[in-house]
Image: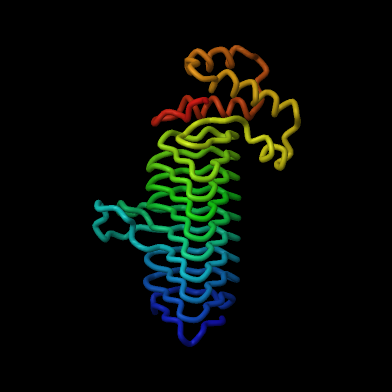
Length: 257
């Protein structure tokens, strides 16, 4: 184990022998850190936080602090972090609010400088939060979503897999999977580049484009569009997932331009 002599480590912390702790790091509480994770200078890790293997926590990041929620009573709540995540400078990730609840971050995620993950958020895998992106409490983010710089996501919103939020945009409605969204929860089209990167063929991309055309055309009745799409007997897995996402939305989904 490599721990710089200026680091302050709580005796309750459980730190693997292969973890690297840099200068002036503060670890406060029953934190658990698994092998080959690197915690860089001036980072702070707090509370009931569990961190998996081979993560990078960069200078000034604050991971596992109490939620920014007036309902928080000081009860034991958690932050669960998987493997191979990067938390760049000044990232903030809060733990859950209710007793026994958790904020969860999966694997292979990249959180850029100044981004914020609020209490009880649930992030999947291979997600990018660009500089200054802000997630309110209870936000869910699907695999391979890209949330660009200084985007704002309202509490309880779902951001679907392989979706892209353009810079400075905001969402108080659910962001459909595979979509490109900008300004105020406005669907602009299909994230074709992202779909090609994961190997989706042209036929399945065309099927998604047609579904988006029917669902998010300006002024179109969403329920009627869903029925029209479901009338097709040969729906691709992505179109089925898109329809299920839309039908299960409690906040409503982003609308078309």
